Image 1 (cartoon, protein in one colour):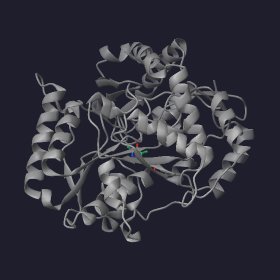
Image 2 (spheres, protein in one colour):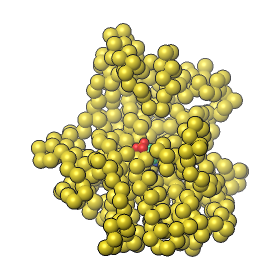
Image 3 (cartoon, rainbow, N blue to C red):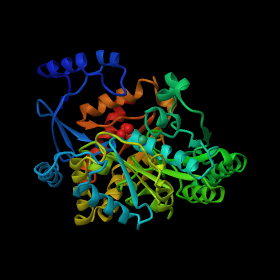
Image 4 (cartoon, protein in one colour):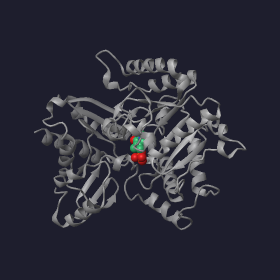
Length: 448
Ligand SMILES: *Cc1c(COP(=O)(O)O)cnc(C)c1O
């Protein structure tokens, strides 16, 4: 199947390259590497102008949960559109934002019952960082202002979020703009030597963290982690034991725990919130990506009564004076509510257990392929690494693998030598097997 670079598509693609500056892209690469124009989507499939189909194995950058053009979500947005499309949230409120906040709070059993809204993931991270910082000022500990982050972590690309991000290529050019942070070892289970379990790696990482907390806790506001999976960091997975240990250390040293669930929240890891695997709640929890089902920009930061009440005062300047124009947009909240309805009515978390077995089965071939290591899975994320000695040109590998997958009618985007799939929660068993076979075939062609 020919998916890309058909002649009559060039016009739109060329116009895009002339006028649109694409994200996360060296634009010159598009001289040799085609851009794809998508005109339609249905379920897990994306279609170009010629009607060629691409299976969206990465949920359009991890956002899509229930397929493209989902009838239930479409209808919810249409219904909301007939009522009110947007109204500012300062001094005003509206039914979708109230209902969404109540439902999300209930999903944490009220532990994180105060919810602050923004539009994109990075902004939700900024909010968590600023709230933590401000909280310590309000509590007369203004010296507690440094953040701790993990090696290989990713929290977005605005300046505050980038400061706690440890992905060299995103930081390189902006180092002098970024605040100083403490960076500690990742509990990445791939570090386990023979005989070691993921829990051992978690304990080692937590021991290192404890040393830092013991020495510096008077200067530390918060630690930010991606629970269970460092997604942008090559889908590095860790034991939930790490989250339990960090929670205990944060309690002991009076440091906030920020759980960035922008990628791993909304059922991705098997439970609605990834933190549930560890049986802990953070002080701040950020969501975005899947929360609106991949429909509209929506992000939020959930926090506790303890944090909220610290800001509650007669003094204006003690309030959390942060805002975005589209904070709590009604259409986006309606889409999110429709997603939560689907979670309930279709018993999504239950069915995802079967779907994650399908996923494991579809990639069973990778277990015995000697060119592959660290086959790993957490719920609806499956990843493996291609041993670098099999890569002729490691820097070209992700793009080559991407191209070969397109020819197989599949959208995947490897990160360095890591191939992963993170599909919407609607693949049939057949589509899942097709995905596994196509990845195998594309890999064979890429390594040939
Ligand atoms: C994607 C992501 C972000 C940033 O979200 P944007 O909407 O791209 O700004 C932050 N944290 C994590 C863990 C992410 O995966």
